Length: 194
Image (tube, rainbow, N blue to C red; front, side, top):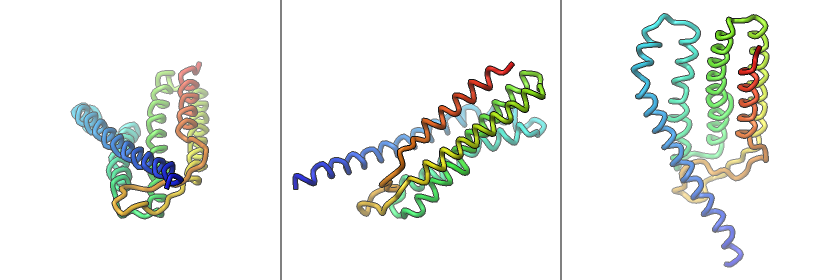
């Protein structure tokens, strides 16, 4: 029995951490909704009632993509008691890599990049440099995320009322650190153009 005590403690710590993650998702979604309603009036005045352009489309995509992330791909797997490991893997891949997180980050950076380019009077050489820099950063982000996602493993729920996906393994690559380092390098380089 004493040999099981460390494993029981480890499992208890895991379940506790999972509950904290669920609470942080709810808190993040609440803050997102609060911010959305604070700025909705400005959005209607400045975006919806203006002439449509590429920037409007980018803004709308960047603004409403988190609703899909928070509602469908965050809360469903986090609070479900019937989700299976294969569905968890699919949801994590969609949410983390191909569609939502990197796309949202990319759209935000693209908007800021176009703004920086406009501030520099739409200089052609600067536009080319920013384009290469942007696509290099985006490709590196997708590569790091793909490597990270290949190492995630899910198992069946440890007990029937367990909520969410039960992660049992991952690789040693911490994608968040790499992704934020890439963004810091990109933003530093973008801000220091001639």
